[in-house]
Image (cartoon, rainbow, N blue to C red; front, side, top):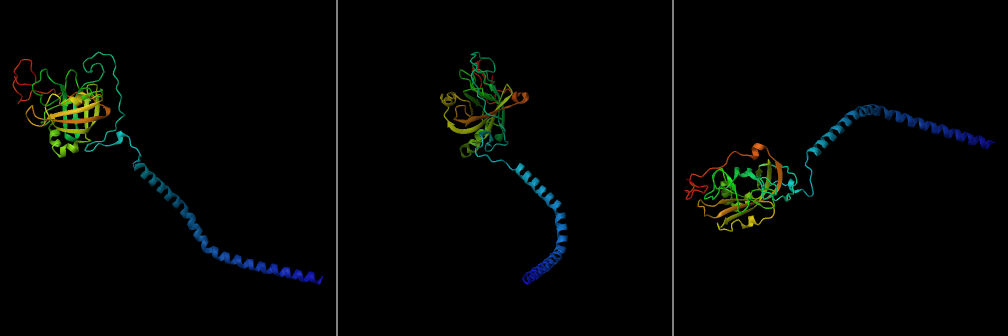
Length: 292
């Protein structure tokens, strides 16, 4: 019995000690909580500001992501900007043109393939912009203020056809003079990649990219053989390297990039060319491009 009473007193004493210790701990916590109470109010007040700041950061990050260009591992050919070109084109894919098979040639078509004739050639980077006309019958000397398309059995004047477009003009101001000037600088290397626009009478604008500069072509009967043998759409530009009609030739080769729509006014220039003031005199009544 005495043992139980002693054990009871021990247990009660221990509980009192534990309660006293707990009270001391509570008092300490209360003292610590007083400064934290003000801090907690400040932290709660900062929450809206922090959320607003996070929102601003997200918005700004989104704008930077929006304005930064997307990087493609394999850019398409139409995304490549040609060197020395003054403007960037957004071009559609090339259109595959198949022969119509009608066999009926008509004005504005090439032996039945149903394509429109070239009407204007523009090289923006070289400030070249001239109408295109068919050469007069029995031409003795090219016309001035225009480019002409080659006609040897058939007309080489139909962009998009499975053959070359072959245009020639004098190396003069407002004609192909700037082609000759630039061909003399590092063999025309700066012209590689320039874009050439060829308009057609169906209000289309065919875009080509210069890929080759050929200088000092002999004025023989075979000067255009490579162009005439082409079985794909190509553009060939030709001018003389000296004043004499028998001088060597400069040839520029360009490959197609795409086709854009054009306005009626842009595709139908008003100039039709004129006999050059220094053209030779005509020796026969049926000759063209000469002075009478």
